[in-house]
Length: 185
Image (cartoon, rainbow, N blue to C red):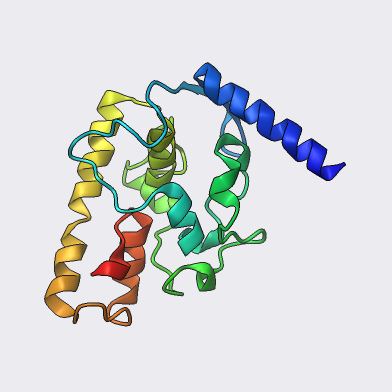
């Protein structure tokens, strides 16, 4: 019975994606919809080349496992097959490097970094961009922010021996949050 319900839900999810419109109803957005105009994981801006997909990030452990717990229906079920999520609250032990490397959403709002279409911030934008949504002005802003985080890659290379994953774990975890694979630095 449970398997049949999940299969029916996944069919509905796939049908929505094929139609090109995704409708979101979660704790932060009600009846929000967006159009998918590109194939999933393709046709990225040439300046935006993330190391990790959203699925890979979720499996590695990001955002204390709390980021995507109420919006799973919006994204492919495969993204969550091996994800490290916390049903209760943030659990930094679920992060790949086991440390807290996040600022609270309230700080992001105060800084004006949150766009109304993506109230959860950069990772939500990235997930939707990866799915195929395009919003030229917002995409340019977020890609500029993503590129600016690269300064942390330079710092790791300057201060850490290659492949020393114990060197600067907070900085490494923060890079994972921005789809840079800091395990390879």
